[in-house]
Length: 87
Image 1 (cartoon, one colour):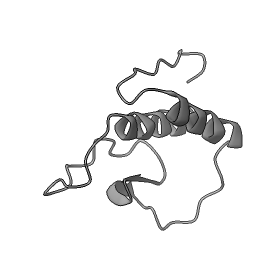
Image 2 (spheres, one colour; image 1 turned 180 degrees about the horizontal axis):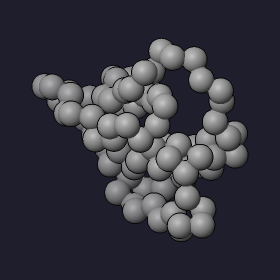
Image 3 (spheres, rainbow, N blue to C red; image 1 turned 30 degrees about the vertical axis):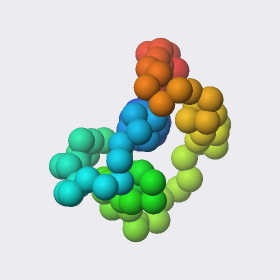
C-alpha cells in the first residue's frame, strides 16, 4: 500500500510541476519496479507506465480521492509533504 501511495503522490507532483506535453522524447521511467502497474499521463500524453494494461484489484479509494484533492487544491509548484505514518 505504501508503494502505491508513493507512486500516486509522485504522479501528482509530476503533474503539478506543469510538465509540458511538447517534450521531444519521454524521459526514462523514474519509478521502475515501485508498483505492480501504473500509468502517468500529463496533458493527455502518456509519460511513464509499467504493465498499464494488466488488470489489478482497485487501490484504496481514500488514497485516490486524497491525491485528487491535493492535485486540485495545490499550487503547481507547491511541495506536498506526506508523513511516514501516512505513507
